[in-house]
Amino acid sequence: MSTLEVGTQAPDFTLPDASEQMVSLKDLRERSQRGVIVYFYPRASTPGCTKEACDFRDSLAVWQQAGYEVVGVSPDKPQALERFAGKEALPFPLLSDPEHTVMEEWGAWGEKKNYGKIVTGTIRSTIVVDRYGTVIQALYNVKATGHVDRLRRILGVEA
Image 1 (tube, rainbow, N blue to C red):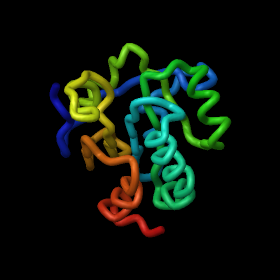
Image 2: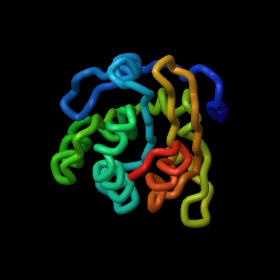
Image 3: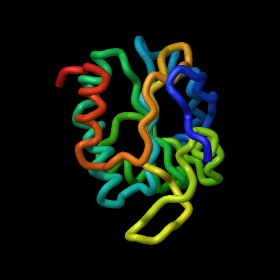
Image 4: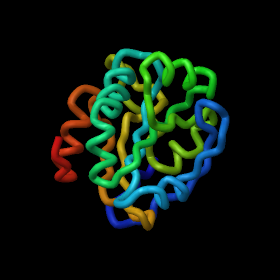
């Protein structure tokens, strides 16, 4: 598995969202003032993924004021994403990558330790790309709890 490096071009993608509408990274970048935060998470409605998504939700106004768009990507089907987004009132796009094509390309799919065992799956990761598609932050194997606050500190975004 290769990861994305700061300073490289992020691969573009187009994936279905919770309502099965196609969403592209290019469109998100063009809508933003500074860039897009793409976070990869293993599974909707699990405790860690819910915590992370709700942290992004609760600080979304701060991210948007700083000029960033936020998007989550998981291997879940759109129907699961729709339930998750509705239950947790998530106002940003959640994208479905059940074949994990984008996750593999972005370095967010591969071997990881889960409860002491080596498994293959989603590697909780957050990649920030600027408006032109250049990677400005690439964080892999992040913790769900505290991750959003850490990212704000790294990017200098005040709460």
